Length: 95
Image (cartoon, rainbow, N blue to C red; front, top):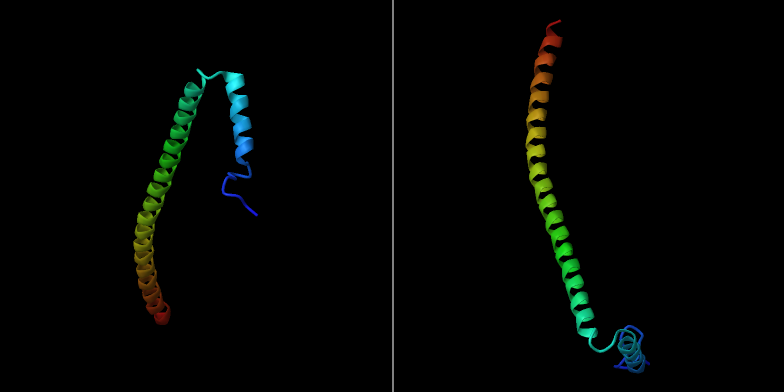
């Protein structure tokens, strides 16, 4: 049975023990500084993730735009190919 106090498979007592060890190792005056550093690190990771998402989205939009251009070019090439086939067909018949 899962208890409401479990967080990532760690119970409330284990979290308290970890906090006690952190206070003993770093001291109470260093904990806010460590928390700020962690917060800044998380913010940088979040910003980097958003930048990567933006670049991927921009790249996909560019590819979709290029796909439309490529489709137009392919349509024109197919028209020229059809015209050449009609021309060569009439030349072949005359020979």
